[in-house]
Length: 197
Image 1 (tube, rainbow, N blue to C red):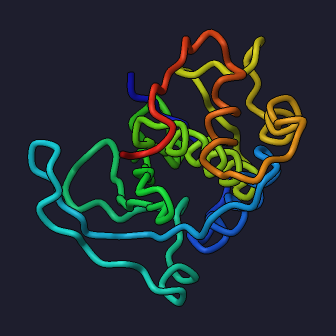
Image 2: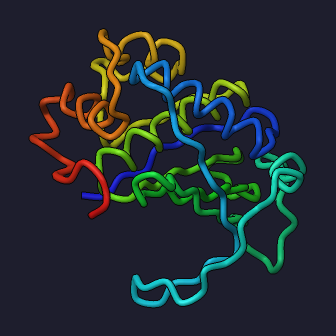
């Protein structure tokens, strides 16, 4: 099972702000310090295998890179997108970020940030925190159609944070990520792995 966690983007935000806020939300959810996150652009994959490592975005680039604005169309299309990969160095996990600008397709004229985690507890917990933080920063909504963390469904980031944060602090980041996901019993132990092997 893969999962996409979405933040609607009511206004543009920088990647630097997303990372800083995402780490704070992650700490709030888990009760443990969040690790640094590293962003890469221009990575290429072929049949699921990375064939180009891309380039790491420097701090200045993170401050200048904006998601949630109109993305210039490269050809007639219903949607344009830009892609990044966010790594969690201590565990080797990651999250793919695709910023989408629906080009007036008539279905959804909005802009979205779609976070797709590696299939581990660390990857999913980080993706949840980044999507919540992005929705909060961009005055948007958090869209969770696949995990279904709270019932009834809730789109307000602060309400999700309040309802799903762990009640006790921990010392081990990966263990807290696993504990966070295990509170959602309907996932039946998904994701199976705590972190990347």
